[in-house]
Length: 204
Image (cartoon, rainbow, N blue to C red):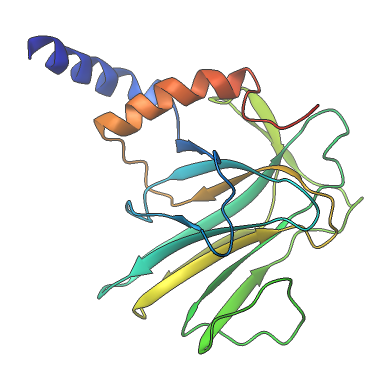
């Protein structure tokens, strides 16, 4: 019992040095029929290290809104790996009740009565700002950012895809609050060294 308590205290002490986001890996494909359900606090800062396996691949995340308004902060970034992802510019969209209509064609279906907010990236070949992420130890291309409050009850979906059908690795950031429980810290301890050794990437 004492050892467990000491371990938790140690992890809480070093947690600011481990990760700004709680890291998750896409161990299975997050599909339209089997999306990744975000069961934890949507406002908690999380980073999903995922990939669009092919140009046709679509990744889907879902979460529920009950009786209170929540802040949905979402960002999609791409690792800078030599020139491999220089023209990989994926988009994402928030799909849910009470959102605006969208009249352009999309590679996925919108549930009846739902609206959508589409977050476009730059066009392939356009200049993109990069930044260095200390905890993962690598640079990323900045991407589209959504910051909105939603209050209508129901299930919401976030869809990531590449309209130019290139495919590749990306990081989907959801949430802004840096909240770390003991299991979040353990997750960071496990995954951060893997990220620093590029084990989250799907390159040849």
